[in-house]
Length: 336
Length: 257
Image (cartoon, rainbow over all chains, first blue to last red; front, side, top):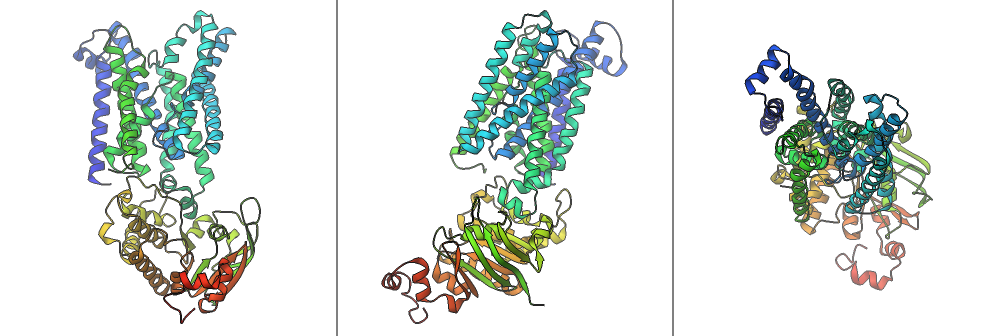
């Protein structure tokens, strides 16, 4: 590993710890830093203790892991479509997952069936796969990557429209929090949620990491990958399943979160100045986690006690990165 | 040992229907065979089929005596490497990293390079004369340099058979000559069999030991370069009049063609 990469990883690790601390220490309830530290290391009881352990800890960790999952899903989709502006949000994958998850949620509420987190992830996975299947079908017919993205955005709008329609007409008090979920939020996470999130995300992260070598060869082009002995069909299937699963997991718990999947891998590539998947995969995961934790902190604290949707904040910071990227792209490639 | 590295028997190839039918030839170690013919005659289809990018529609291909179907992809990658016309977008990769990618079939599960791999990459870079820009960004070098790096990548794969699809398309005269000299040296020093499609007849004639002419999806002529590259064969292969051929092609070496 080059020195640059070692330093960058140390910086990412430090930022992760810092962002976690900030997320635990700040919030709408006024708990001093020393009290927070006391609760975390010595335990305690009372309202402050409950706020820290039952609200802030699960929320911070879910932002870390889901943010990482989102950035990784974006990176994998970019590799698959050979397009740096591909991502779970722009390709409509998040919206597809949102639609099926909302349908299952409302169905469960109407029939008074308790809904487990795992079932939510399953439902979202079906939606993300359906969206991806649709995008894949289109990608065979259209030439040019910008067309693909436009199609993805359209799929996203259709899914969002149907979801909004369903939510509007579902009149049940059980889905009162459906609205905040449907615009994207890390609020209301429980420790049980975090365990399910870990159970889905960690295997997907490890699986992606194990694909590093063929993924690197695939980056040179499909025909070269075949000539070097890569099983391209298997690799492409794995990429779709992994990115779909990651995006579904994020959507099931936090709703659709925009721009993280594009902006974070881009920033990470710039910082590390490499295209090696073995480095980019863990780096994107950490970067996504940091980005989402910081955005979530802003969403909670800037207009406290009113909370902003997480996508509002990620879009403010993520969208300009994407615009800059497209301008640079036009000026002559991704080098530099 | 008859030193045949690649042999095709009654090969049929194409995408949804046969573009090529009944193609047979063999290439020995150290031999350079060029594939020539009009546009659309099936040159690329042939090379893609030999490189197993395209499934065969009939016939057999033998790589170093073994049936191509029975070789594992990874083992096959140690025998055949390619330089294709496909555009390579290796963003954020140095030229050296692109060359090192050729070590894929030899490296372990995570693709870490050992000294032997680095030596192979260094040698490939030296052979192609790419030392001067090896550390530069692949997307920042010229077309000609990029082509040399892609050749170095193919060499780095240490193949028995090297397949080059129109490798001289982007090269000016000086780089074309340097490129052909490298291919020649590789064939002689490493006993590599080279199969190369080309449009430039004069260059093809100079570099080839043998040639395979394709026309309308069949072998039109094949054999030693001296027998194939005659004015009579070329005018019929490309459907041009002898007068035009004389005027445009045969001006430098009248005595030879």
